[in-house]
Amino acid sequence: MKTPPVPEDREATAAGLLLGAARHSAGRTTAVFLCSAASAAASLALPAVLGRTLDLLLRRSPDADPWLLACAALIVAEVLLDASVALLGGTTSARSAAWLRTRGVGRLLAAWPGHATRFPPGDVAVRLTANATEASTAPVSAATLGASLLAPVGAVVALFLIDPWTAATFLAGLPLLVLVLRAFARGSSDSVASYQRVQADIATRLVEALAGARTIAAAGTEARDRDRILAPLPELAAQGGRMWRIHGAAVARSGVLMPLLTVAVLAVGGIRLASGDMSVGELLAASRYAALAAGVGTAAGLLGSLIRSRSAARRAAELMALPAMTYGARTLPPEGRGTLELRAVSVRREDRAVLAGVDLTIPGGTSVAVVGRSGAGKSTLAAVAGRLTEPDGGAVLLDGIPLGALRRDELRREVGHAFERPVLFGATLGEALAGSSPMSGERVRAAARAASADAFVRLLPQGYETPPHAAPLSGGELQRLGLARAFARAGRLLVLDDATSSLDTVTEHQVERALARDVQQGTRLIVAHRLSSAARCDLVVWLEEGRVRATGPHQELWRSPEYRALFAPPEAAEPPAPDLPSAAAPPTEPSGHVAVPGPTEAEAADR
Ligand SMILES: Nc1ncnc2c1ncn2[C@@H]1O[C@H](COP(=O)(O)OP(=O)(O)OP(=O)(O)O)[C@@H](O)[C@H]1O
Image (cartoon, rainbow, N blue to C red; front, top):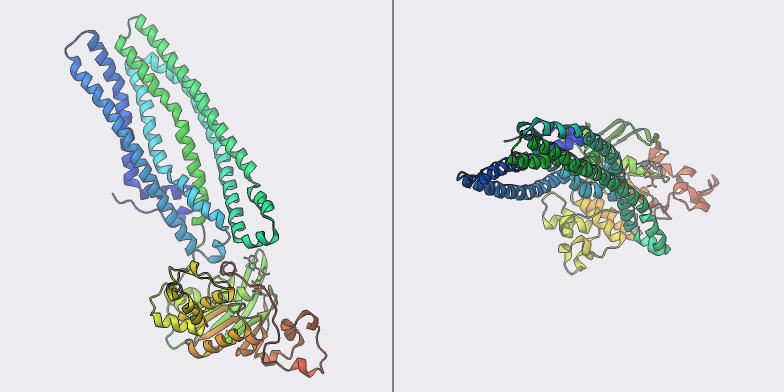
């Protein structure tokens, strides 16, 4: 039977996510429940059949034979059903885990990059592996728990039917069990959540250390960083110990309580046998039913599993709560040339205005350098212009259409990006440059030539067939591949966020010339620290503390000593005397650059 899907926003809660997983595997989970229930029914029927068989055997009745066969059939059925539950349960949980991971990864990648990168990679890995696995067992645990209660409930009913006194004796002890299980559920939730949090903390530290392996080796701090990564271990041990102590205490208490209740039922049954109110067979059946009813004590194990699943689901659901990037349904006017407009754009980060009321109009086909001191908001502006982040106020329009109203394919086809430290995805370099769109090898190579990447790629033994991880790339070569990827898909707007910072000035010049000559013409927004880059652009946007300080051609802005100071080494940053002609004349060749580390692709996404 097809079940309706859980709405996506409901999946952002642990209950909604678990419901979604249960619905996804509804057929198999129902089969687990039915097999568990049938096994419980077989175990319930067995004592009655055994008791009846014993009475018939004691009477040497010829009718005992079919009853003996029924006993054997019930035992075989129980074994087979239990085996089916184990097999089905395992595969059902595996399917639920796959579903949870697919949803989680999908949500993560569909979210605004800045939101997604707030979860450290190690933490995300734990949420999508260990936590997803634990959460995935919930449907099967719930089905098994539900079915496992059928046997004790049925056993108490059977006790009533055999002799109400035996049933009343058993029920008298049940409130104590409820208290034990309640205390267990409360204590466990807390310690399980803390355990999972500390687990993720260690993973986060480990992944950070791997990313900074060179820094650790260079500083010779291996021992200190090992201790730092493993610092939460004592807390993990404490939370783990607490978790299993609570579990152990619940199992021990119910383990004492349940046999006591069984003995009490037997004692009452013995008295009833002595008074002639019960047969020997009925006493045998009552003792077996008492043991079955005592099985309610094992609920602690399944309850513990459900509590761990719920806590893990809560962590996985936090990924589902990430706000997804939204797109519209509009396309760009065909005659547009890539005019970019920012109207009163503001971006806030941690209660601070990173961009404040930025108004800009960049005519189509213009190359624009965005300059300013470190932290001025250049990368944030680049991210807003390419809609890698949504402004908190104002609007960004391309050829008169708000970026948010554009169709996804239209937006990503017409707006390209290159970053300071690009990440290459794909089985081969050729694939990594082509990206997701089908593209001829010649177009990829032309883009690589424009980015001065073709020559070194062809020198690799496998050329464009080299897997990215097997290509020995310098920072500058990697940047050129990132540029080639952007050039190959160049549309109306190309955003280069410090994407040439690792190139030597000669190569940078070559790339810029090829960009102007060989790459499809459109608007270029270039975050630049080098004087030469700013000088070669048609227009410069000078940002200062999140605001546009000035816009204009480089030659015009060069008249300002403060503008010149952006590109000058510190000792020359003092405003020069107004009568110094050399300072006022805009140099055409690079005279220096402010060496500021720019963002990685991931960092750029975090604007
Ligand atoms: N996710 C974020 N959370 C908090 N602050 C942020 C975030 N992203 C950027 N900022 C802050 O916003 C300001 C502008 O950052 P941005 O990276 O845009 O500057 P930039 O001009 O590109 O700097 P640089 O030249 O050093 O790359 C900085 O002060 C930065 O610390």
